Amino acid sequence: MLTPRAEALIQRARVARLATASPEAEPHVVPICFAYDGVAFYSVLDAKPKRVASERLKRVRNIRANPRVALLIDEYDEEWSRLQYVLILGEAELLASGEEHARALARLREKYPRYREMSLDAAVMIKIRPRRAIFWSAAEAP
Image (cartoon, rainbow, N blue to C red; front, side, top):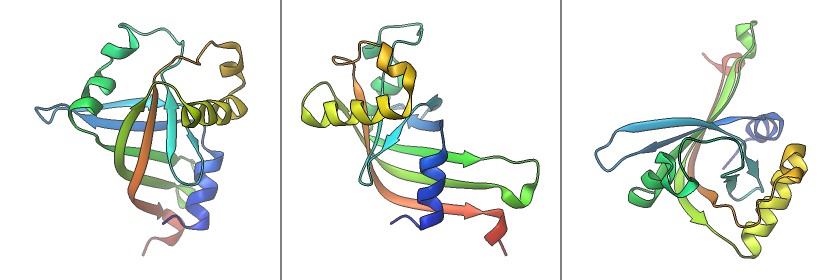
């Protein structure tokens, strides 16, 4: 599904943007930390300050009501010929525990050292299974 250039961009990227929609089709976009295991993307609801409890976050409520999401991973450069992005369209689910949660958390801790200091074993994990991936690069544009 992913080209080698898309895979390389995903592995380099530190932040993605997660887009969800409410039952009323109101869009909501937030930056997230993420990990990709070659099959799915994962993002844990970490200990950074939030206005409400994790279970009440808009992204969580939206995923419960409508699991269809978009994930944008992009790379900006002042030299516009180097602009590129990967847009993932997929289905999200929430993981609270289990082997998959533990594997995803280990991958996130490997990528983000700050997560090693946080107690996240019981934190909600967002899993995104890609349905479609779109890669765009200014270098390859017509």
